[in-house]
Length: 79
Image (cartoon, rainbow, N blue to C red):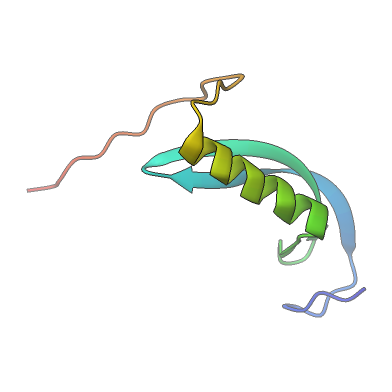
């Protein structure tokens, strides 16, 4: 398999943190995906996309409980 972005051939399965954003919140989901080692392009199979879509829907509808709070993000305006 060649990377569609950089045409590199060094693509392997890696554990990555996928960001799901919803209403200013970010949820990091650890997923195993194919990743190009040259440029970082990620390749999503149907199972991975289904998992992301299901999590996004659950975040909208239900009050999910998360395993770990990683940090906080603050916003301010510069004068």
